[in-house]
Image 1: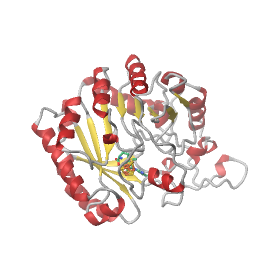
Image 2: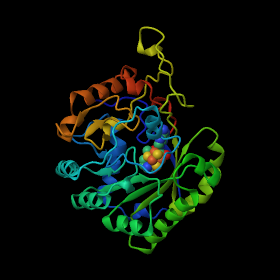
Image 3: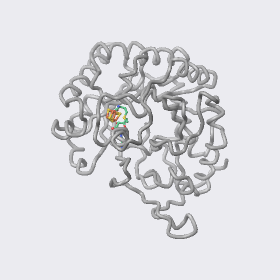
Length: 348
Ligand SMILES: C[S@@+](CC[C@H](N)C(=O)[O-])C[C@H]1O[C@@H](n2cnc3c(N)ncnc32)[C@H](O)[C@@H]1O
Ligand code: SF4
């Protein structure tokens, strides 16, 4: 595939602010830096590696919260959510075994669900690290991040942890993140950072992030002021309304015959994710990206095929070809995605 002058943003799913004196990057290996180089370069070159650089593995889609903005909560309320379960150890082992033979660089151990509710979470981290995965990470609501759990995660080899804290004041947070409370979560995160700093874990990356719901933009400045000195990185994610009614809804209305007549069509857009990563749901179903909460574009199933077969398979190639040739609106999930219109691009 050849190089083109396209609109390609390697990290368009969020924006991020970093402290100037971040310690963890100085303690990462040359292999990590090489992986990040590939992460940024492959989408720009439209290069499809033989194996995904990163697998987003939904170890469990069980959750203890009912956050009002979460696609999971919305689908459960709509009655459209899939069954709830946890990935079997055998399936996980099969994925990591194949990954380790194919230089899998990174895994993110969550999709829709709370990774700290996964009874195998510590073993999963240990197993992946033992099998050469360079970066093991996940997002967490931090409500169950006790001191004991913090020690176990760090000892198991967790490389990066991203805390989801929506809002800078208890009123906002407690209205959104139903099932826990602001003070518990803030204390848990502060304790985790303390334990990390007291131990030999200088390479561990922490970030606090907020999904920005309408009206929450005004909290951003105070949020950064509070969290940046604690976690060193602060992220802001665009809210995707699973009901399709949100502020960033892209209608994709087709006015007449050609794709150029879709609303908001960006002819230069190419999504970076199909050149970097693939998502594996708890039951083995694979999907192309973080947006596809309804499994609208299933790529395959690890119970029937290898990761490599699915990654290089006809379905994924069809989506990539549509992206590369500017025909992304022909793929339903891409047509309704906010990414072609996002201004975000940060280096992770
Ligand atoms: C789905 S959660 C799963 C991991 C964990 N339970 C947590 O809350 O971090 C991962 C991230 O997705 C974000 N998220 C959930 N629903 C979203 C939506 N509809 N639009 C944008 N981000 C969303 C959450 O705020 C969280 O930061
Ligand atoms: S904790 Fe995470 S997965 Fe659970 S409802 Fe909230 S955002 Fe969704």
